[in-house]
Structures are given as structure tokens and as C-alpha cells.
Length: 266
Picture (cartoon, one colour):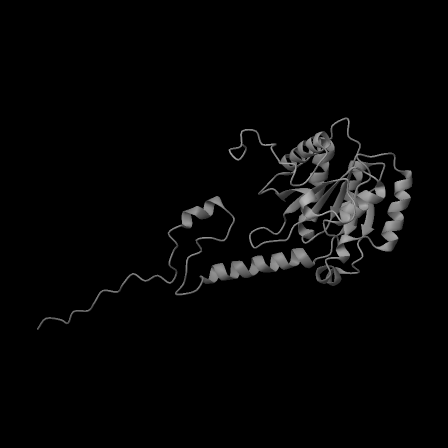
């Protein structure tokens, strides 16, 4: 008697690979992760949880101001960085009250006013602010400041470098106004994502003063080794500053055409 027919097992691996998985080599974005049944594979779920934890840490960890100043100090010697604080008393207050991060604490403003009396007509002030990623500032602020200073044109005078805790972008407006400078560039930790937790941004504002809007600034984003390098960011910043001085504007009226031959240009 013939043996009963037993169907061959179907190829049914635990993890179903995504047909776009070859695209993962081209981007750090979380794409083509595959699936296990109707869910993510365990390894991808654990990797996602780890990335989320790193992003939370980038936001919540306090900035090591002493270490940052030790890195910046030799670049600006004999003048030490000016350490300031926003009106937000702590990290929790900073996250819950964005408005407090946009203005200086009373003692910091008084210290800045004393500095303004001693400074001699600078064109540009650099502000290094913790923002939403202290990780980004700790890793990349010193190389970026070094690149900016190294590329400074001879006809630009840079004032004191301010290091500000619990700060938002707009705090540069008050700092620039107190010091009476025509331009301020805020180097700040950007909101971390799941694929990048250490991105810096540079926000350039002409004629800084409280009440300026984001439409009046130029932003260079994604400054980190996997995005815009420190040298590239510094070069583009000086290009924008040159054009800002020539045209008398920053923000939406100043387009970044520093990349020659770009297909995005008219």
C-alpha cells in the first residue's frame, strides 16, 4: 500500500527580510527592517529601544560646562569663554517652559553687560548652547568653533564666545543685543532623532534683538561627522556671513547658494 502523501513544509523563516534591505547601506534611517509575523524582529525592536534611550539621554543629560570650556579656552586664549545661563533653573524647567530658555537669567545678563563695556566693537559673537542635545555639543562644538575661527576672514572681528546652559536659539538675540554686535551665530544641540542623537545646528541672525523670528535667521542643520562636517559647516557659515553683510539681511531673504553647481539653484 502506498504511503500517505505528506505535504512538504513551506519555507517560512521566523524573520521575513524586506526586499528593500539593500537600501539600508545608503542611509542611517530606520528602513527595511524586516518583520517577524506582524511585528518587528526582536533585534530591530531592541535596537529601536536602545536608540530611543540614547535620544532621551541626549536631551536630559546636563552639559559638562567645565569640559567644554577647557576645549574652547585654548582656541580663544587669553580670553576664556563667558559662561551664562538662561532663566530656566534646571533641565525640567527648560523642557517644560521654552520661553525661559529664550532669555538670560538676571545674574548672567548683568555679567554680560559688564563684558559689553569692555569689548571693542566686534562684528560677530558665537554662542554655544546646549539646546536639546547636550551630546551633540559635547562631541562637536569644539571642532566646529575651531573650524570657524580658523576660517575667519581678516576683516571680521569675533567677540567673546558665550557658553549658555538651558538655552534655546533665541537667547542669542538677547546676547547679541546686549553686546551690540551686528551678527550672532548660535551653535546649538538639535532635537535628537532615532538615527542621530548628536546633531548640531547653527543659527545666524543679523541685528539680533529680542523679538526676532525664525524667518529672520539662517540655519545650517545636521552638523556632525555623518552629515555636514565641521569644516563644511564653517565654510558655509562664512559664505552666509559675507552675503549677509553685502545684502544687509539674514533669514528668508538670504538664500544659501554656497554650493556651486547645485541643481536646486535657479
